[in-house]
Length: 261
Image (cartoon, rainbow, N blue to C red; front, top):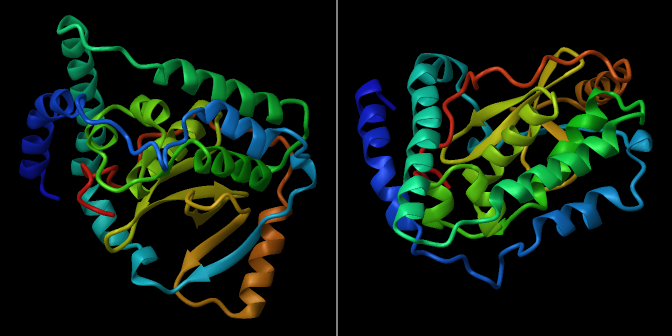
């Protein structure tokens, strides 16, 4: 995505986001109570200190990252991410003055962050266990619905409110939770698909939050020996190691307005 196209997308976001307020999620797939969903699937009865991560590989083009392209288009991607968040916020202000109902996404987001933080604190978790807990929480915030405009053109909190989305929404909720909980997570994208990168014990691995498993991957083909060695490294990190204070701006282009699926 070019710098010029990014500016066009950002400039049209407030209007698109405001118009999208009139769309409702598919109740058949929506997670109507994300807080309860995260609590039931990721918190209650789960001892994260006993969880182990595994490393595999993905050879599908959907998961093949392009490091050179990511680096070149990173500035444009960051403009889109932060610009669309600002644009969506402007639309929410507009909807308030138009008398439209105001959502509960912010409150739900904070409750989920509090739940996950409580599952981490004092539990002596290592890096992969924290990353997997964030991945689990993100996977249970929403159900799969393609092209739902309010979550495509809205701020991240709208995903917590509507409880639906597709790969771009899973991606940005994962990044949002990682930033709030000081778990190093960023954006990654393949050919027509969005997912996340994680830094665990100094190594970059990838995960797709459409699954709540503790399996991470690298693009391409790995031998059995490489997978076994990578799994050992993922699980061997120091527990409660110092993490950066939240995430840095994503080095990869962020959500692209729903162009990818």
